[in-house]
Amino acid sequence: MAGVDKPYRVYRGGRTKGRVPLERRERAPGGNGRVPSQPKIRRPRRRWSWRRRILVGLLVLIVVLIVWAVAGFLAFRSGVHAANNRLPANVQQTLTKDNGALLNNASDILLLGTDHMNNDQRVGDFHSDSVMLLRIDPSRHRLVYLSIPRDLRVPVPGYGLGKVNSATQIGGPGLAVRTVSSFTGLPVNHVLIIDFHHFRQLVDSIGGITVDVPERILSNPFDCPYTAARCATWKGWRFAKGPQHMNGWRAQIYSRIRENQLNPADNDITRGERQQQVLRAVIQKLTGVSTFFKLPFRGGSLVRPLTTDLSAWEFAQLGWDMKRAPASKALHCRLGGNSDPAGSSDIIPSEDNRPVIGMVTGASAPQPPRPGTGFYGPGCIVGTGSFH
Image 1 (tube, helix red, strand yellow):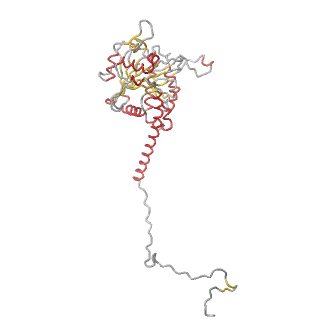
Image 2 (cartoon, one colour):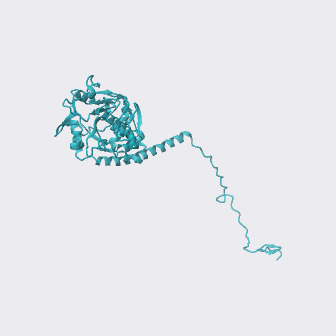
Image 3 (spheres, one colour):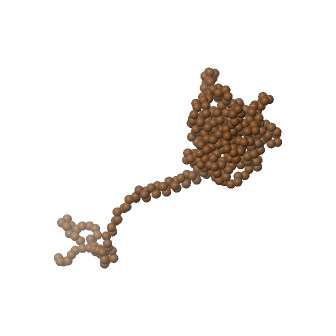
């Protein structure tokens, strides 16, 4: 037995416990036991080139912009749909259908500015304090603003002669559309009503507006923001001459000024022009690029002070038309006339109004008001100038 291997190991302290250790078979050197496998060589990882990084970054940016645009458009469309529902149903019947998309065809949009809670406290008085016709002219890459004094005496269909702003009170925006269209001979394709009492929120939502104030203004005292003791000696609101950035509160005050104590010639025409300055600035900012990035968050609230028949897609087209039309080519026109000899506040239309309509449509060259026509002289000016 001495020459036979024992299935256990013997140590000085005795046998070890546990399973009997068996001899292990050596594995074949190759994967299949015949041929050795080739060692795997790990190739070095190539770093992205700057060109590839830029292309991927641009692709990601495009995708983000598309998603942002879709989300913003859906939010904006929801707000526009609510603005469409606020428009009386009979207004659509008074509007003239467009010949095509706003991108390629001329279109006339009636802008009505209302202020139901102004400084006169005219409760329930729904006069349109500002009446303006905006003509989109894509073929000439030009915008035309036709100002219509609210006290201009015109035929109101079915009601005889009256102030143009009274049409809104008598028959709502539908009658206002018919009145302006019959007097000017221009087809009104769309209507946009801005409530000046609530548009302060709109101006703040779009980050304020820039208005070029034509002259220094010291208003009559109204809406005093101070204590009763200080308001007793307060002179009024002040505005410097030149471009000024205004928030909603400041723009609202500017649009409500009825008297400039520094200029005795200031009248209701100039007040209407101030309101129209605000209207133009709001529309330009509302359809601008900076507003686009706010649409997913504020798209619905932006159009809350608006009432219109324009769809969200037509708003987008209007924004593109305004981008293509430089301010230096914009045409600012106004209708007018003479003071009423009977002493009323009405403005009696002048024969010079007819040539102004030709200037608006492009049938004749723009001409400023004739000398001697006074504060209400009809005419047109080109660019960023004013009638002052």
